[in-house]
Length: 245
Image 1 (tube, helix red, strand yellow):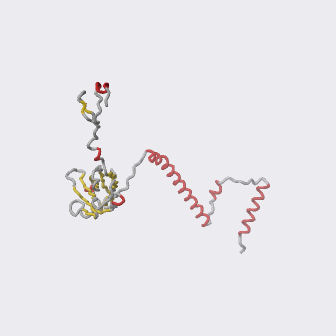
Image 2 (cartoon, helix red, strand yellow; image 1 turned 90 degrees about the vertical axis):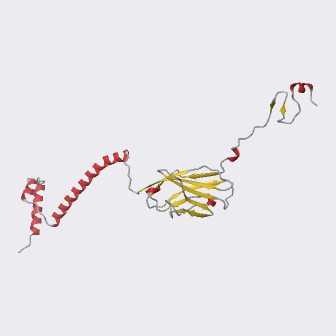
Image 3 (cartoon, one colour; image 1 turned 180 degrees about the vertical axis):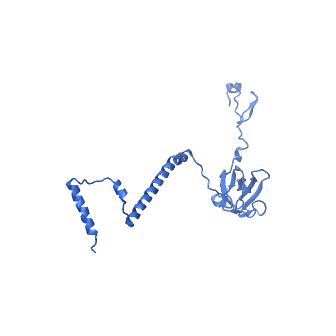
């Protein structure tokens, strides 16, 4: 039973959403966007860039997370596109078992190293070459989870070499310590040669010439008592070294 005021204002008892002919409008619940229910059901992660060397195996990692249980319907597909462009080439397919490419650029060079039970869909490339440089795409579908992002991996294959980049600190260290090291080495060599000469002279019984003796300063004074004692001792030593005939 509605009050007269409710009838005047148009506040009649009616189901929610029914049209209000007095004011000419309809009230309804807001509707959800059609794409909300189709959110990403799979998440895939890869390495954006991978460095490889010629003739050395390289692994292209791909991990995924599915919100549905893993079944035999799960599929993994790897595609390849050269850096120079061109059409995309399917190089690997997986569904319960691995199906590597038997034709094309990667014929008999792709192997499965993943484990779908652990969310791993990685592959390995045997004997990579310079011509393998390009973009690789990993796609995983696990029905009903089939919508996912499309990550890409850029592969760069080069020859292995000893690359060394001189930084400012390394260059400064070389300029400071290298001359010092050279000077120390030269001094050690000179000291070694001098030590070798002295050792050789001692072994061969080398005696100083009269000129070398005259050049040396006299450390004893003949006029003092200490000097006379030194002279006598030297004469005694010379007398003991002489053998009688």
